Length: 85
Image (cartoon, rainbow, N blue to C red; front, side, top):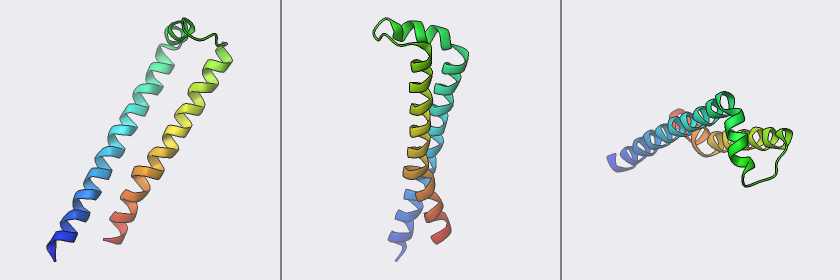
């Protein structure tokens, strides 16, 4: 009877650490975007012809989608397991 509880605890810990790791990656992305915006735009501008507005919109939407996925795939399942067991 201990095996399912151990599995749930392991899954909860895994989801928690995955959420923390992905949120840290999102913060690094935001920090790089905020602090090195011109450098990133110049670097990506070598490959893609993007205006500043398009570049900003792509990163803003990308960060928003990534944050939604973190919530859907890691934080909400973690909270469900935390509250249910």
